[in-house]
Length: 378
Image 1: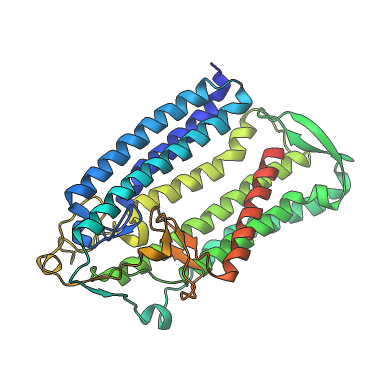
Image 2: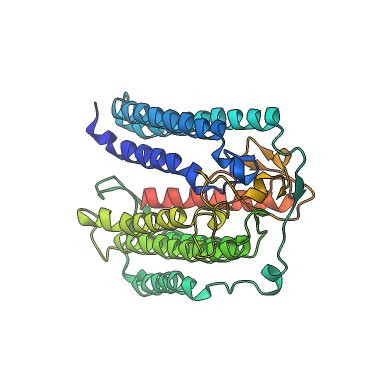
C-alpha cells in the first residue's frame, strides 16, 4: 500500500462521481447516446439501463481506487487508477447504450412519428451577446505576468529552475534565455487564445434544439452564455496558476509549503464552479426550470413521461443515430458545423467529418499537452 497513491485515488473518485451524474444531465430525448422520443425517458428499459450503469460505474470506481492504492509503485498508481476508471466507465456506458438501442429498434419507437429538425433563426439574427468582459481577467493576468517578467529579466539568475518535485523542491535547471524565462507567459497566451476562441465558436455554433421542448431556444441561450462565462473564468484561473509558477521560477517567491496548494487552487476552484454550473443547467440547459414548464417540457434524463400529445404520436426529433459512432463520436459530412453538443455529458465535441475539425483537435490536444508539461515542470 502506498500513501503516496492518494493523488490517484482522488481523481478516480471525482471521475466516478461525474460519470454517475452524467445520465441525469442529458436531455430526455437522448439516452446513453441514443436518440429516443422524449417520453421514452421513463421507459422501464431505460430505467433499468440507468440502474445497470450506476451499479457498473460504482463497482468500477471501487476497483479503480483499490488499484491505485495497491499499485506496485507510486509512479504506477495514477495511470493504473485512471485506466481502470475510464475503461470500466466506458464499458458500463456501452452496455447501457446497447440495452436502450435494442429496445428502440425492437419496439420501433419512431414508427409512425413525424421526424423533424428544429432551427430558430433568431439565434443567428439576434444571438446572445458574447461575454467579452469575462475574458478581461485572463488578459490582464497574462499581460501582468509578461510585465513582471520583463522587469525581472535582467535580475533573474543565470540558471532557472525547469522542474520541481511534488513538494515544490527544484530538481533540475536550465540556462536563462527568452524561451526558458517566458515559457509560462507564452503558454498563458496560447491557452487564453484557445479558450476564448473555442468559447466564442461554441456560443455561435449549431444549436441542438429539442423538437419536443417548447422552451428549447430559451434553454439554449442561457446554457451557452453560462458555459462561455465558466470557460473564460477557467482561462483566468489557469493563467493565475501559471503566474504563481512564473514567480517561483523567477525567484520572486518560494516554491515549497503552501505555495503548492496556491498553485493548484485557482484551477481546482474554477473546475469545481464549471461542474456546479454543468449540473445546474444540464446539457443544452435541459435541467433548467421555467414557470411555464409542464411535465414533458425538457427535463433531465432521469424521468418524465411526456405530454399526452407526445405519447399519442406527434412530432419528434429526427433519428440521427447514424451520425454518432457509439453515441460519442460525431461524423456528418453534410453538417457544416465544426462544434456540436455532446450526446453523453455536458459541453461540445467536434464533427470529425469536417476538415477543420482535425486542426481544432490537434490544437486543443497540443495546448493541453503543453499545459500539462509546463504545469508539471514548474
